[in-house]
Length: 261
Image (cartoon, rainbow, N blue to C red):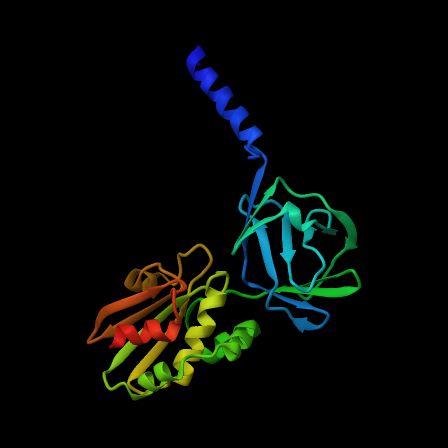
């Protein structure tokens, strides 16, 4: 490395350090939405379980029902209480400076696939659900993920849009691509389930297709419909007329109606 390049590298490093930006120690975490979490015996919709993107043996649990985030050290089988200030949260992602250190809160136990521990007198149970892959009935999705059903029941679609769907006359096929491990899907899919449930119409058929972690299965459906998820794909006369990808800016039912108008 020549003197000029070396000087530039040193300058950039000093600037980032002075700005408080971690260079080598930054750790990224991604939510794994396959986990169902109960706190004090009740399903917790605010709970999020994050795992390191570099596959280190740790998990972080955040919840509005806990006084602080929790770190699980999977190699030591111990639980640690963290300071919220050590986490930078952005939806389904976290950033920390390395693996954060916290106060020891004891051990956890695993029995029948359920991880259980206590923090501040509250019992926490975490279970990882099997991934749903391929075409899945609406009823199976709701039975598999009780939090989906809770979110679906809480969602209140606009009645004008529901009336439009109920009275729609043109034969339509809707393909809904989702993944049970996807953090966006757990927010979006309940609104889709509620919309097509309330707006049930024999002219509109809806198929739900689950995607495996890694995005390689079901191969036939992914090749035909693409790798977008969550996605609501609308077909008429065997041709795609439009699709909604991710969480639309407005209400889901309005987005669907706008395609059909």
